[in-house]
Length: 112
Image 1: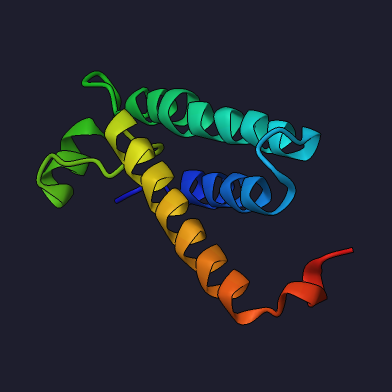
Image 2: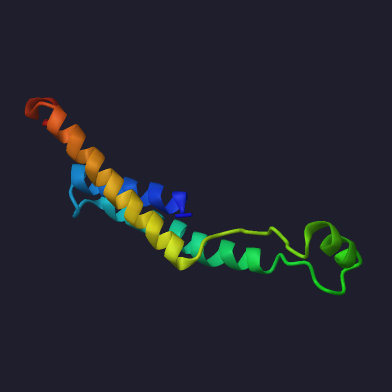
């Protein structure tokens, strides 16, 4: 599954860039937040999930494997491909929605 958190922050950054300009300071802040969220999704959270396995010498290891067919469900975080897919999804959806909104709003409404 694509990273929904990454899709959200990339979509936000895209919308802010389209609305306020890609050279605005608020867009730069959105890019930094998107980078932190993406790094967290693919780095910190993914490695935390990989370390959450049940060790072989754990007292309940044998009974756990009998009940759950030897599979643990400790999925946490996203692979880099899932983060990239979430980012692309956020970029595309935000671009489409901005295009729909900008087409439906008269030019004099949003302009100062």
